[in-house]
Image (tube, rainbow, N blue to C red; front, top):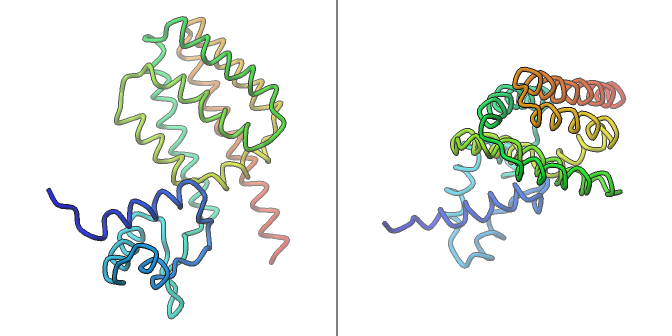
Length: 215
């Protein structure tokens, strides 16, 4: 099936937004994008409109398209969704976990403790959680969790990591992993829920202080 001209442009722009190459608020100029892709502005506009529908782009009146910035409410709502999806994922995963899963998670936490850069903490945090959820075998659920991470984006993930620091998340990760090793599903789910909700409270407090400082 032949792909429409807008589709590869959409894919490239979406990947650049997800990877952080295009930061929130960055302008997406149709002329420049068309020139870079050797095409007219028509498929570029189609790609941008689809990105708008998917929540990655915002069109400003008389000013064109920019990479969409998440509002405080949206960030907190995405965190609530994380709770629902990830608690279900670990609940499904634990009966299928084997020693190799625990060892992989342990190695990630050891590496996590050695790192000094928040960008490294953020990446290892994602790896740790993914390691715990993958034994669920539920590809749709895992993709939904990945989609939330993509929606949050690398810049906001690093911002969240800076707020949380190293010690508190690392300590909670170890407690979650210990519950998984013991096969205690209710404890692991409760620890994971508290872990994510504590992060949500920290984000809410920091964003509230920021909004008060600029108002």
